[in-house]
Length: 135
Picture (cartoon, helix red, strand yellow):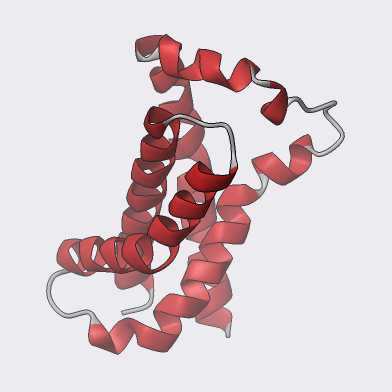
């Protein structure tokens, strides 16, 4: 349990820093994608902002548990294990969620694609951290 919590915390910190750094760069280099967030669907009064900021940790702890349970299935160098872990997560969890989100919400293919790519990168980085800390 200690390894799950420690690797989840380290991955959460890593993803938190990288996520917000990449968000800054994405807004700078792809501003047209972010104008889509002015849709009333995304209107927030700020009362739930903390949930948004904690997502990297919630995500990392969940993935850390998943890693600890199935890490024996991922073979090779830590980078390859992380990539495989990210791909498994993307196709098992992200693809169905993005499919239902696109079909049920007024969002664009570009937005859903960016969410899919973002989740894939996050899961891959988390997998690399887990492979190093909790092999």
